[in-house]
Length: 62
Image (cartoon, rainbow, N blue to C red; front, side, top):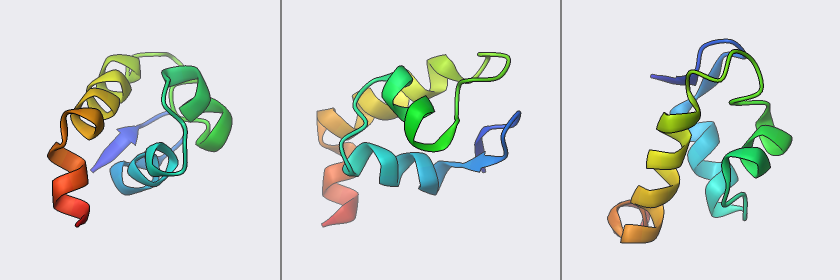
C-alpha cells in the first residue's frame, strides 16, 4: 500500500524512515518525499508516527 500517492512512496519506506529517525511529517518528507506533494497523506504519516511510538510498530518489528 502507498503512504503517498503523489510520490509513489510505499508504507514500508515510510516505516523505515521513521525507524531511521524521521519523527515528524516534515522529516519524513525530507527523507523520502512523502507528504510533500498535495499533502493529503500527511494525516496518514502522522498516524504512522503515532503508531510507531505507541509500540504497535515496535512490537511488529521485534
